[in-house]
Amino acid sequence: MFTLAIAMVFSAGVAQAEPALLGPISREVQSHVAKVVGIPDADVDVEWVGFDVTHACGADVDIDIETSTGEQFRGQTYLKVRLTEGGISCGRFSVPARIKIWKHVPVASEAVRPGEPVSIVDGRVAMSTIRGVLVDADSGPWVAARSIRAGQPLTSRYVKRKPAMSTGQSVDIVADFGGLQIKAEGRMLADAHLGDWVRVANLATDTVVQGQLIAPGTVRAGGRR
Image (tube, rainbow, N blue to C red; front, top):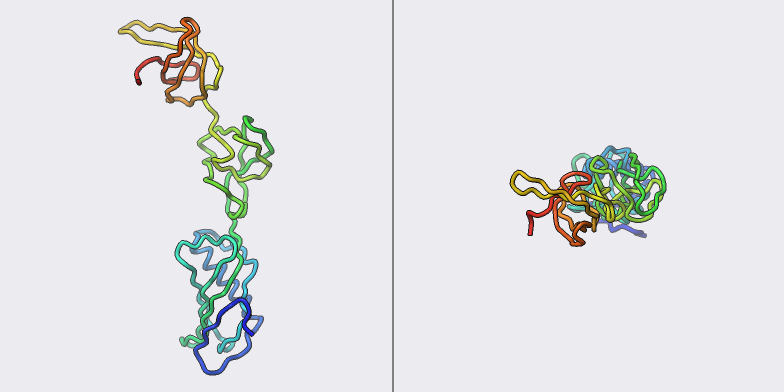
């Protein structure tokens, strides 16, 4: 009885599938997936292959694995398994499998709460556990946007770049008039990174001005409308 796979057998006689064939198939699946994804074989775990069918192949069989273009290998994956013997096809099957792909990605070294700085280390995690776009560890520093557990993959859903200046911090507002520069005390009204255009409270005039954060603690007023 066929279970979990559909066999298309190309010869008149069939033989019961040998359990020993599962090992070679699993190894070929591992190698195929690693090549498609572009990772080492060791980072592919073939957890299960649903090969329990009859076939017309002998002991000396070659195994070829195919998968659909763009296959993500998440959850259950269907593989095309072709068996040949002496250059002659002796079995072609659609076989379900469960495959786990591991990848080295930025992860949190320890648990943190929102707003706290995030210490990043390299971690080997299953791709199926990653939700969102992974961040570049070198483009930080990063702070937590929400609670993060130790070892959690870091994506844009969970971290944000630490701003150069934060809401409420004091800044110098500078404005150039010809060769004269005027400076006033201000307060940030939003978080900002260097180069961002921000709104700043001018404490001397009790007004809100717009300017560009040109250095930590310095906003140049005017310029953009």
